[in-house]
Length: 633
Image 1 (tube, rainbow, N blue to C red):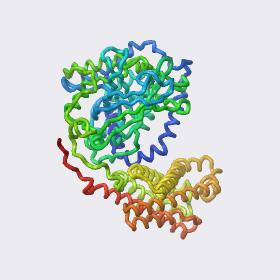
Image 2 (tube, rainbow, N blue to C red):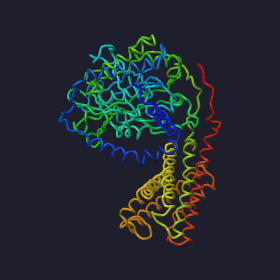
Image 3 (cartoon, one colour):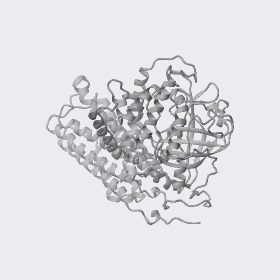
């Protein structure tokens, strides 16, 4: 049964708005993640936990649904119907984790010296396994990267794994699958049926938004971690669902990038920009992930059967047990991309010591096999159990003997010479404009004698206050990722500027969004001059914030100038602006306010010029960073 036409139109509109958000996401996401994401996620998790009963299960104990076989069959029917409806013969894709960004060769190295309780399955002894690693989008379609919901997935297939397997279609493999959000979209298989029905109708968002059966909190968890990614190599991945770690132990696992860095996101968003980012990186260097496991210690607060619950690290910290290494290589030949279609990555390809747990994992046992068969029948391709010895055009470049990259080489980012991504510069430009508007609007009502949360200029002024600080925070984080800070002044400048800016974000949130409501409903908390809560609290927090801002931005400006990243004029604007903006003057007189307003405008101009100059440096590569012809052997 098709949903009403108005639902389809509304869903289409909402999806277009999400795509629009993805395009502006890089301007604020770094600051959002650093300041807001974790507190909001903790709040959402607390609300989700409130609805959960205590099943009184033991560690690693499962609770099979009464109609689980029927649920499995319904999910297979929904997903099979989706494949047949959306793909013709020879072009069928996976129904989940659909778009392949790349399949790359790697090694999975189990660490030495693991504690005894972690030495199970592939982690029983220190050794190295050959691996094929598939990076993909979430599905169920394969649109341009910017439209693919902001979630990534990884599938790791280890080869040369001896021992009896859970299913017999592969003999020597162990598969691990994970996604870039710490929770799954549905808590269990029964709810997943509803989602698959909505996907078949073309309205998956209404699974989360339906008033009659809302899953809004689950959707919020996905939204907090969905983002415009810079590269599949630069995000952590989470199993979301649990697995055995030997007899009587349950675990979740995660993969975390070994190096924290961010590639520039292209402004034009090519359809396959994530694959291009992967190819550019692996043409130059090795990439690695740390493989962590987290053991279940509390069956209620760390449930096996609910995949929307994050297992708290305070109950059981994650422990690194292996390293996944992806050597420098070329992987984007047509032959290697076609190889991805022949791979079947299934968490049930593995040892009993790592048996998948929970209803959604139990459904996968039959689901993945049936969907893999259907896809390969539609495409007339045979499934392949790889050995790790497969050879494709291009191949490894670690010793230069196995071929060359199919993409043209270019030097890595040149960030040591202070070039940064365009989004960093644009964020600082927007931050500077916001700070200037904040300081222009803020004194307007005070000079007119109407200063306070009830005045007409209060909310607009402090909205620019909040946005300016948030965008500046994003710019600082991006700058830090691209600039290897070495000197003491640089470290001091970044830490102080980051701390002061983060505090400014907090005061902006309070004054723009919370303070007007508090002033209306609890006027006793507001002092006569409009300051926050009490004179002591206000003066203390404001003094600390401005002290961090002054020390931080002056140190950063001087360091950037000495590195010849910004001009003397830009340095002067930042130094003079932050001093005037932070001047400890009585805010009630027109003359002191003029100093603060002028300082805010000058400081905003300095930030804008800093952002624009860094953006301009990234527009034109230096001779050392220009594309060089690919070499041949």
